[in-house]
Image 1 (cartoon, helix red, strand yellow):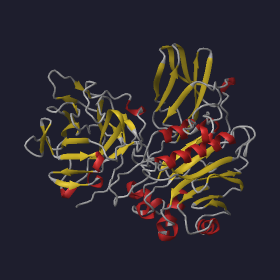
Image 2 (image 1 turned 90 degrees about the horizontal axis):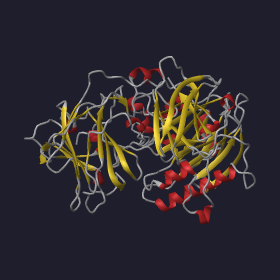
Image 3 (image 1 turned 60 degrees about the horizontal axis):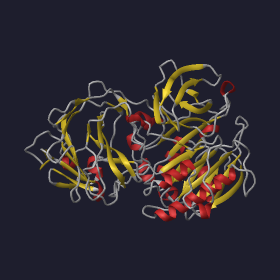
Image 4 (image 1 turned 180 degrees about the vertical axis):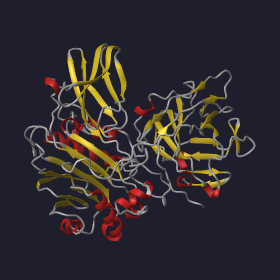
Length: 586
């Protein structure tokens, strides 16, 4: 079998173009170019019209009842978003099938849904066929997101793939359909129709290249990497090049089973400048250029917390929680672990208890979450909604301002992909499981990225002394990086104090070029949303008007004159206000 790596070239600006429905009287669907990051967060699809909407109530016994489908593309990939109407794990047994007529020729491929499908992909089997030959995910570069249960998924397929030496997409026009292959299962559009989609390459726009160096030498850089069974010593050259290219100040390593914290510290000190500190709990090794003041074990062998003394330019320490939750189908253990860890966070931000942090001490939770199962685990991590309250105590608001934690939605430096696990030897496709989650209300966040060396251009590899294959040899996980800038501003912009009970988020954050600002109202009313700079000067007014109860979103697209840096989105509603810190990275 001719394996094809996911070689996404520079470029990932999405062009959603004319999607013509093969339904009587169906209108053509089109959209302006929009960036789509494959991260399981759907805010960047908001400006793309759906291509088709399937009637509700026609699902089969599996529970799948298709809703809407969206289509888009950039140079490297075809993008699909699909609503399923029921919770599903994309890479575990299910009855969902994707059909694509990749050459727009009804006489080739499998005759289905009014087309000749050259490509058939069975998500639950993690396998498919192309022109009659069996294929795996790496033959066609298919990626799905999120990795946990959801009713809504985004999918990308590599346009330059060549399974068995044959171009996957020989035509610029393709036809697409989905099927629930269970008894009486649903179709979209229908069992006899499909959607025709024409790739648009008329005006490709590359995403901005993320330079691996920090924007400011005074920023503190934190990195997480699952080393895959003591990989620092099994593949030292590749791990050394990655470490030196990133040059972190704080490191959260997982899966170092056979080497102590001291030995790991010596390995790092031989490759990076400075004197380091280290501490550990079993496989979890946390290292820092700055002093480690104190440590705790919230979950034995699964979560290890250290309080780190940042330089004097920061007005705070930082609590770093290095984690490695149980893998794969072990949902019960993983939920217990995230419940127990979040109970520790609740203790840390509350007076008294086993640990009490100084008010507004930033918290960074990072590592291999292994969140392949129930979405409730992600909900617990972000919102403090503890599942087992009898054992681990009450739910709580985990950020200092009473809001949810903020997930860092990073991408790779040259493409809009966010996967952090990648193994061509596995039937499981790439996924985003090495997460970074923070108390965003009290942090000045800067650059973040995921360093998959395979996708870097030769000029970047040369500049940082890297080889293209380094990340895949070093581990089946990929290093995830976040920069923290000194806290020179607070959330009190122009005397405004945030109201803890108002749901007000921005994703992605940090961002470039746009971020989706979402809010939820429990009753209708007048809403104003404005953007301020750190000095309290108004940058832009995003909304001023009456909004109904429910969830809403607004996209902020800063103009070219708005430079990189920290901004604040302020929302006023019903006599209350909320503030969210935004980090624009040009």
